[in-house]
Image (cartoon, rainbow, N blue to C red):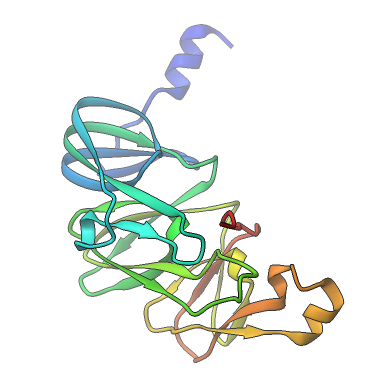
Length: 222
């Protein structure tokens, strides 16, 4: 490939949207004011931008996604000013969601990449897996209006309830669902207690959706 062709083929595109995918794993945000992003996700930026890390779970949008199970945190940062910031997270695929006024989605804390500062932000926890797994317990409740970017390992699968899912593979679900945690004794006996598959998230009801990924993402144990 000629050098000029390489440059032109891979330079940023402009569509006029505030959140724009440069490819399936790289997000370009046109910042004019403030956006919230996962700390450590910035790979490049231009313009006049400042980055402020946040370290407290208090204060809504200026909070930290904090796991009570592992004592590990997923800190967020405010990106302020005018310019473009480019975000990525371990080559995970990026999904851009537009939330209407009052629309909400619950997302695994580790899978939140970025969102507009007008989006409501609340941290919630879901029971305990008895130390067998940390992923899937800590979720961020995001409420529109506004744009949200979440990440998945590979292409997501969206299922309708009733359904049971592996907590380590569960990315998000609609706000009308309240999952419970169930232990499957038959799986525990057949594949061993240490496997996350001995526990499932149980989604009841006839409406809503659950997002899973073809990957078991486990948080480090404390």
